Image (cartoon, rainbow, N blue to C red; front, side):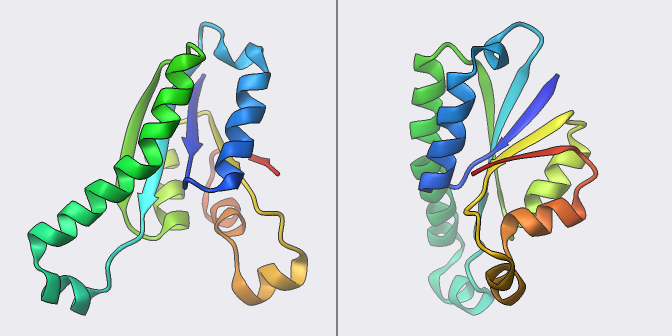
Length: 140
């Protein structure tokens, strides 16, 4: 089973990873994990002012800051995984990558906002659920 783990470096990611690691059946043979992080894009004008090299450095630093602790945690628990980051809006990038990558399952943490908050602010999880044809497991 190809499993995509969407991470953002938040406490919700930590909770999702803790849940995954607590269920040893996920670490068995037959599961291939890819850890995915969507780096928020720098606004166009700010990117033009800062320059390509500085903006690219920001994207790399952000990805490293989020992915390295996850890489260390999974390695310490014996989970082999690939790591990918893309620049873009999180929900769009997660849904697109999950579908194009042929994943069997997408696992992500959720903040668990109420209905009114989701209506007003929206949520990455809600947008992914609406846009993605891959089954999604939300961990709160």
